[in-house]
Amino acid sequence: MKKYVCTVCGWIYDEELGDPDNDLEAGVAFEDLPDDFVCPLCGVGKDEFEVSE
Image (tube, rainbow, N blue to C red):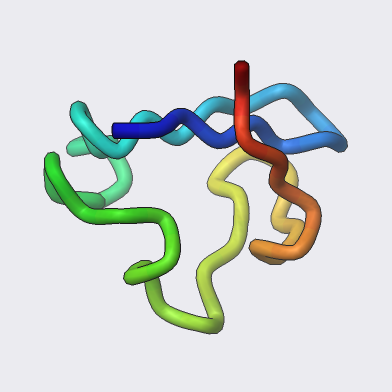
């Protein structure tokens, strides 16, 4: 599973862990998050995230 980093604020979405504090279940692929998903810290859209190496 991959991790995605918000390029604006650095918040990380880890597909394996999800983010229970923001109602994101573990195991949900980033691509499967809703199209209107926004970073819970800074509010930018999915297009501002990059895969973390």
